[in-house]
Length: 436
Ligand SMILES: Cc1cc2nc3c(=O)[nH]c(=O)nc-3n(C[C@H](O)[C@H](O)[C@H](O)COP(=O)(O)OP(=O)(O)OC[C@H]3O[C@@H](n4cnc5c(N)ncnc54)[C@H](O)[C@@H]3O)c2cc1C
Image 1 (cartoon, protein in one colour):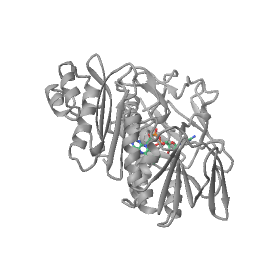
Image 2: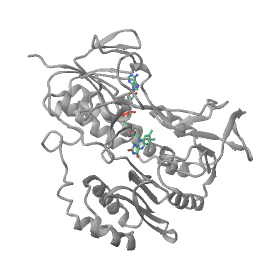
Image 3: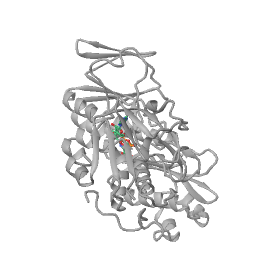
Image 4: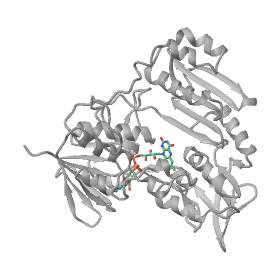
């Protein structure tokens, strides 16, 4: 029997991991990749801005690699429509691509607030490679950069902006920075740290208008003084790329609703990565987790299922980790669960903060902030993640953690979870390196 014709839409993290897994599992069916952009990793774009890597290093699969996997590539093409009854896609030029099974992995796009002048020359997003190139070309050591939005994505590029500009101001509409990543105490530590690095923070700031006046940008606010900038970077949120699925019959909420095999309500159509609303490992409910590890895991699970395996997905862990000018910040799981039992530790003199959220003695979420040079930070990050993922019972250690909130090593070792955390592979064998 001839192999299936697998069609993947989107060559980002989820799409590429699906293709790699399909081939690693020995599937010899046809693989067609339709992707607006060539395969690259958005997550490493901040390192390109920091000039730590060249542009070629953002690529995740070269044409040679795709050729080796025998992928029929339609790069630079946009999918405009899906007919799940007939089993085909319509591309922007009008031609059709038929499939036996389909993966939708079209990721997200950056969204700008609907304010006058938000699309002025000199105002950039930082979401795709073209944005990164534009900011890289425009930024200079004397530039005053204004970042609009103080969320996770803006924090991923702060190091690059700090290194390559003269002055940085961050404006945020919420009353504090990182409103969707850490709590008030955590944000307070991060704000102090940034101000000590010379960053100006303006929170609770409602931006009304941007004007380009002879190359200088003028930002006017509902209250308070206007700001003049050389360059504005907007990091004001993202939206999954789902518009093209209107009328397809797929069930969509925030993302495409998928089951534990990452199948949509149409059995031969899968979704993965930023567009999938899939199981949250901690809560069991379905959510969009627009982060790299989720896209990677989803892609691998779909690749295996497309290859005819029967792989169920345990769910993803919401996880944001960022390091800014020597301060590490991370949050995991349900870090803002109001119904959880909470243990905190705050050491402002060391810019250190811990918050543990437990339900029935099990860690369901955590916040961790500390200086990068303190060697515990990497280790503790791994241990906290392990404790959330394993669901180990920490009841005997609750009192200890309350008295020693910065000491997770003892409870971690006593929970004997390292064996359970050994790499679990989707295909049942060790994974070859990414290039294989
Ligand atoms: C600057 C930056 C830093 C980040 N840092 C981190 C981090 O530190 N940690 C973390 O976990 N996550 C991070 N992320 C988020 C992470 O990159 C995304 O969650 C991840 O890329 C999602 O993978 P995906 O495969 O779902 O989508 P993407 O990687 O976005 O790929 C989607 C692909 O689909 C294509 N496409 C879109 N629409 C169509 C269409 N209609 N037809 C055909 N092709 C289409 C796109 O061109 C693209 O190739 C960062 C993102 C950015 C921008």
